[in-house]
Length: 143
Image (cartoon, rainbow, N blue to C red):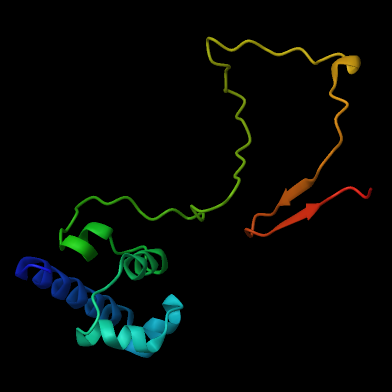
C-alpha cells in the first residue's frame, strides 16, 4: 500500500504535468496525442485515477526536453542546466569523423592485416544493414 507521502508526491507530479501542458498550450487530448498515448490514460492520470507511470514520465521528458527529470519527478529546480542536445541521443550507430589533431592512445598497437590464407572459410549466415532512422534489413545468402 502506498504511504501518504508517496501519494502526495504523485499528486505533485500530476500538477507539474498540468504545468507543462499549460506552458506548451496543449489540451489533455492534444498532449496525449503528442506523447502517442491514449486519451483515456491521460484523463485517468489527470483525474487521479491512475498514477503517472515511468513510461509516461519518460515520454514527457523525450517529447519536451526543456523540462528536467528532477523537476518533473521531484520538483527540484536545477540552475545552469545545459541546453538539450541537437542530435537524437538514441541513434543506434553514430560516426564522428576524426579531427586532424587526433592522436593514437599511448598503448595503441597498430594491427597488421591478416594474410589471405588465414581468413576463415566458414559460410556466411547473414548480413545486417542498420539505418540512421532505426530501421534495418537482413540479407541471407541463397543456398
